[in-house]
Image (cartoon, rainbow, N blue to C red; front, side, top):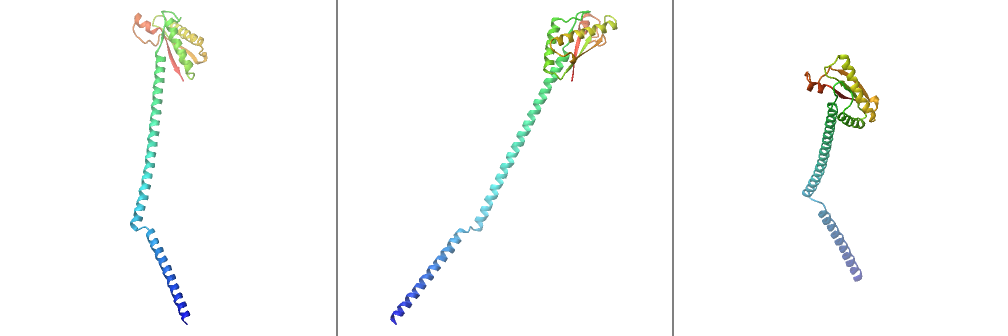
Length: 206
């Protein structure tokens, strides 16, 4: 009887210890679980941080896009300026080519040394710009008949054409016309005016 009592007490003690252990573990799990779960303030702070980071990332993207747009605009502006400068230089060269005439002695169609040097420069330009054709316009002063001056102007234009073709410019790119005395650059009736009017003018054609 005494042995059964002791055994009963031992069983009760074991059950109590087991229940205490289980209860203690449950409490610890609850405590651990409670410490891991963030508070509402912490959740709000986390969301706020995420929002801030997203906004900062979006701002960086926007800044990079704006910078790329500015670089593209600057590149386009520089390209436009270069094209405009190129066009200005081309126009200046064309203008210089067309405004540089060659001049002749009275009643002559042969080229002076100075005229030949000018034509060499023109030949170089024509070689560098094969898309251009050339019109050579022969002119005379007012002395002589209209018919004679038209023929003289034609000979003067042909002299320049012959010289240019000898320098390698295709004759197919060069045409000639004579205006005789019809287009004086100086309307005077003296040697100063006549010297200016005995000339070949040059016109480029695309």
